[in-house]
Image (tube, rainbow, N blue to C red; front, side):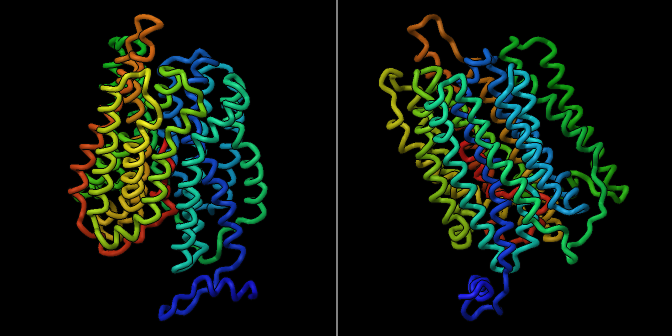
Amino acid sequence: MTEHTAARAATTVPGGPPPVTVPREAWRALIVLLAGMFIALLDTTIVNVALPTIRTSLDASEATLSWIISGYALAFGLALIPAGRVGDRIGHKWVFFTGIALFTIASAACGLAQSDTQLVVFRVVQGLAGGIFVPAVTAFIQLLFPGRARGKAFAVMGAVIGVSSALGPIVGGLIIQAFGETSGWRLVFGVNLPIGVATLVAAALLLPKRSSDQPVVRAGIDWLGLVLLTVGLVAVLVPLIEGQDKGWPTWTYVTLAAGVVVLVLFALWEVAYTRRGASPLVPPHLFSHASFTGGVVLALVYFAAFTSIFFTLSILWQSGLGHTALESGVVSIPFAIGSIIASSQSNQLAQRLGRTVLVVGTALVTVGLVWVWLLLRSADPATLTHWDLLLPLFIAGLGNGAFIAPNAQFIIATVDRSEAGAASGVVSTVQRVGSAVGIAIIGSVFFGSLVITGPDTVATGFTSAAGDAMGVSAAFSVVALLLVFVLPKRTGGPAAPTPRRAAPETEVAQTTA
């Protein structure tokens, strides 16, 4: 079969529209793009098993462990919309190249960090870089693959997302097991270096420049809105993460209140900016749809619920129960497998069942997390093993996979089709913000309830604290389950959002983040 015939056959559907030719160069470009996606998502899950060894190696504070995850997620989310719009204006090739280069450099810096402060700063830069290049992945798929071939390309991307997320904890555990705690956590970040360098070279050679039919977007970037949103969110996160470690001094309450005030100012600015006829970071009119507002809250709460699961379990398994990083990675396998299985079928189920697939998904997550919570509250730490968590985490993983892929489509379906692109960008950003807020709250609860009175109480103290933290995650999942009912029962077909302004919602990136 010739190359041209193969490309046509790949997009031919009996009885459907005429076949569309997809050049071989497009598939080569997709490999490059997905290599970047792979390291971005691998890095969200691989770090969890390294947290206890980072704490020991750098004498890191409890708050630092939260910042390592929250800082990455927050910077990632805040970069998505501006990076997508810059790519729309100047072309996505060099935005992708710049993001990958910065991500690779930041990864090396993380591995060489000599203090916990340095590590947090470099992780924030790493998250910022991820937020820069990830929108280009979906943008290129939209531009390079027409019709049904685009669906196949997104399906391949979804598979890469699932595999990279599942591999993260195991790869991290194997590296630390092989090279020891001191060097192992540094090499966890070093995994990105060869992949990053190879991706840079391939991107320069294989990614196309702006095509003649790609529209040039002239809309400016709402820089003041971005600054206000960043300052407001950081001001809220700082006391949530640092408050427990510092004993909740007065400044934490003042900073939290100031953050809320800045976020209100951000909302007022977005309204004023829109009235000027400019393109705001977060279009205020989207929130005139009550269902969209509820869906955004759903995204925030759901991602706060499940991104914190393995933050809690990794610290418990290693610092509390004395297991190795590899054994900690094994704990996450049932959740990852469940997520991959369910996500592979979620779109078909969504077409058949409508909103019910989201209800079932959040219900399964809730059952799984409540089960884990009850187990941690009642189990004897001396006899607790990963086998005890296998079934509840597998159930939660199935629910997560059923929810993750289709949920954005249902949220975006609450607004007009002409608003789908802007809505998609908002939802993607809120997901990352939810991850950051969730880790901040869960970390505060975990370490705030941790009581150790002697060597004999370490396991009991960590298990009890993990139970409290998992209880909060379970409570978040219950709220998410209730919020699902604000979404429409059916999407009425894809809303065709403009993906180049948003991160991919199938970002099972955070399935085990």
